[in-house]
Image (cartoon, rainbow, N blue to C red; front, side):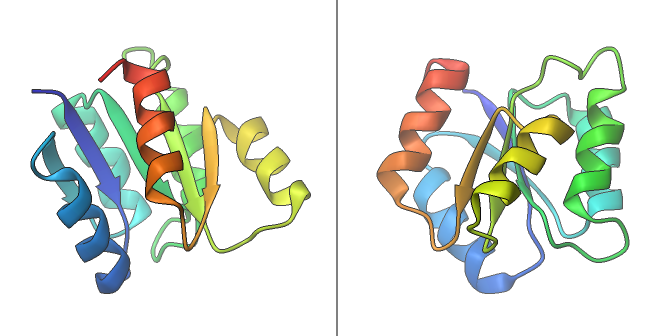
Length: 120
């Protein structure tokens, strides 16, 4: 079973993601960007779902830090955010996201992105 790291601070979003993914994946949860970086280092997930607006360390910073770790540089990251402008998507991709979905996200798009990135 593949492991996904979900970095999300909003309970409603976290509950939704957990319900959608828990039957198919081993889930690790982090509630802020700092925990996200630490969890990525210790768990070596197959894929990371990263909220962009996080406490302590935002998603943008966490992604840059994760991608700078040689063992994690190739780990796919899907950015999740309520910021829906084209420039937000471009910024996420420039910071190291492999995909960017806006909230509320379409679960079919989420599963398609996961399938494309890790083949599940």
